[in-house]
Image 1 (tube, rainbow, N blue to C red):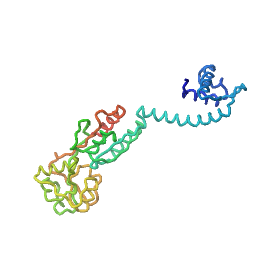
Image 2: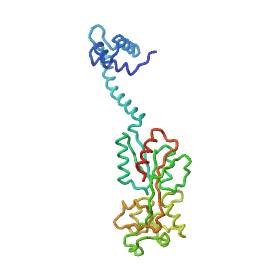
Image 3: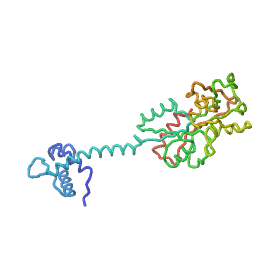
Image 4: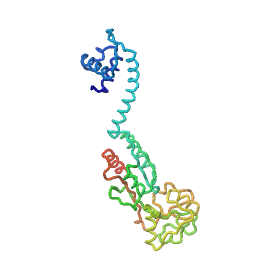
Length: 299
């Protein structure tokens, strides 16, 4: 059995558009005899005549007219499908899914870097917020391609590769008129023993709140929970409402509410790092973008 081919459809359309086998063969750079043979094979396969051969000029049968219109319309979509698929095979117009923990600010620098890569490499990005633990699971399940995580992570990283992007000093976020810290220029962790924390660690998650709790334990106390808490960015709104304090990385200064100020911790070695994470067996199509994002974001 002779199978239909894409070239046969393209030949057929060209013959109709040029109005003759001779003109079509010249445009297609194939012998007229070969072109005629391909049309014979096409007609045999579809089991009806496309051309009325009683006239020397190209004339379609009634069935041939319908066939031409339908094939012409569908060839447009087929070429589009082929083009899109080819771009994906070449890594173009691919959608790369990125997640970041809520304690990592997607600031203008990060957005501009992704925009530059998107424009130059012809790829698309989708950005979502996930906890560090959920990012690891999403990476392993193939739900995201790249994660931006703030360690520690309470999950095995056996199949995950991590690359350190940057680290920043930690600050105490306090209500601007907090009586104890109104004139304070720096704070020791032990000074926060009697304060209420608007963000305390989740029992099954790591991240910033887990790091903070370990710092408090190292200073001899467990952080007291405020009546209203959040491990998300809106913890600063709780501080602004004078519900408690929080320990946050330096990049939070970009989103400070009006009634909140950041006071540096006296020990400037108290740092929080941000890492880029991806599956170790990541697709070769993703790897170049992982490396590009890493080198552009790395501080």
